[in-house]
Image (cartoon, rainbow, N blue to C red; front, side):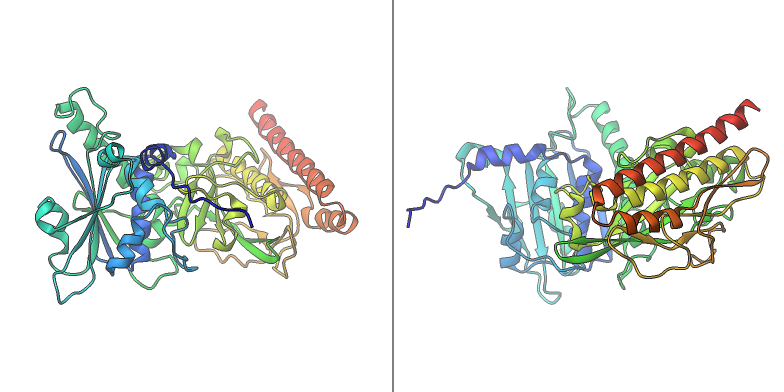
Length: 469
């Protein structure tokens, strides 16, 4: 048997390298709130205090807190724990990498016993690690930290994360100047917008969790931002689709819920239209909204299945992916990247094309004209799913319309005169190709891609013909 050596990574080099893992500030804060939700918190408060070079950001929750051993493990890079199916955490890196991507000093305080005021405190100090090149985690007492760290824990259990030495946030020539103070205020608004979007299901109690959740930024409660404007009467909720595929020997299911948002003139108010535009504004907010465990991990974009277009900006599609297939979707540490597996790309492209065609009609109609009926790649009315196959149809309807409405197995687009034109009977075509090419999935995907592209081209021709007329 060969001899082995234990090679410990350089603490200085690894900790500095992981600062550049790709977090943006709002996403880093969201990663910490994932931990709060996993700890059954019902209140999370985000506070930023401007004190020049001594400025700090604090994320405090009223969750269950952590016992000593669990706190020590949570502070380890690559903590050794198994995440349950319902938890939002994944790699055991988020607390450290998210925090130190923004600051040089991370301190965590936690309390578990509501009857005793015992508070455990740990700190990673990047400058100390760089000087020593040793994985030395500091254990501190309450007298060795700023009072703002332990203040939220005086009344009961919870966990507080504090960032200090904000070198990545206050990158100003004069960290104590007016520009730095204004910049921190702007950052707080960006954090608020991001959290309202990412956790909108939790804030609106639409996630699969029995506990309510309130998030505040600078003491102001955040209202959920619904990317699908379901409170608007003119929003069209199309029929839900189900896409199944095989991964690691098991059948995994993706739930797809398309929406067509109202044209600007159909919105109830101008303010409602502006609010629905989202943090990235209309054109960049079209496309897929991908959720994992009720938490949004992608807000818009077509994942290279089609290109964004002014005429399709009203198309938004909610996609719920199973946690068991995280690796298939390429979920990364910062939860800011999603890759669509090859097994479902053709199905999702067909759905996207049909919804985009419908969005083009809504865009140019401005609230007038008749609406056609759209479906994805499968027959209407549900049924059993197969690998790489969708079930369910898409139908018109307002925001409260039932998702199981009976539809026809065809895809149509509204022409300039208001009549509907049958384009492609996707269900029939898919079943024939699936039967004939079951042993050649690569060719099947190429043919479905070609058919989807043909549908896009025809819908675009309809739009051009209308504009020319």
